[in-house]
Image (cartoon, rainbow, N blue to C red; front, side, top):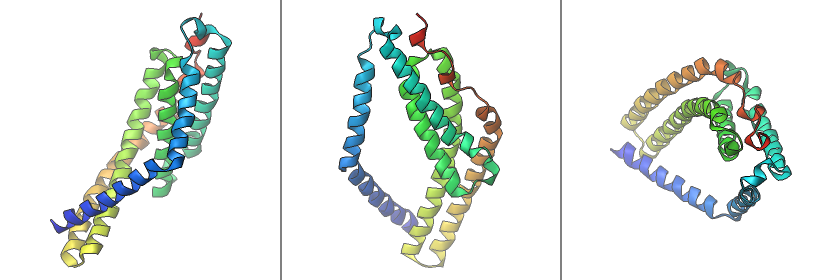
Length: 197
């Protein structure tokens, strides 16, 4: 119980830092920039979808997504050699790829986007389990340090061991999926809806 209480205090402090980041001017600027992109895209009507404007947006999306794929997947070809920091970096890059892919997906047909998005989510979810496990292990040890004593360190060790086993199982799943995912054709390589009229 003391370990859980200490972990809850750490969680509250982490949420305070998140709220502080969300209230920062940099976060607002990011939202405004994303909103500007949305406004530019949302002006397109069904008649505009074959226009130069729609094609320009599709080309921009293709370049963005190809770049994110390069940074996330191609740059992390050898998964077996990744340490925890590199695994975390891969997870963040895949998250960025997913957000951008979801944003631009309406430019392509559902048949083109769905298989890719399904595979991306599976890999990202397993990497999320690994990240959650690493965070839980750190919190357990920090909470034990705050409490002090052999019993709290022992409890933290049990918690860390359980999460470490869970993380390894998730990474094994990623390793199994990776060859197929790595060779998956990104939907942005296909012809977008805007060129099909």
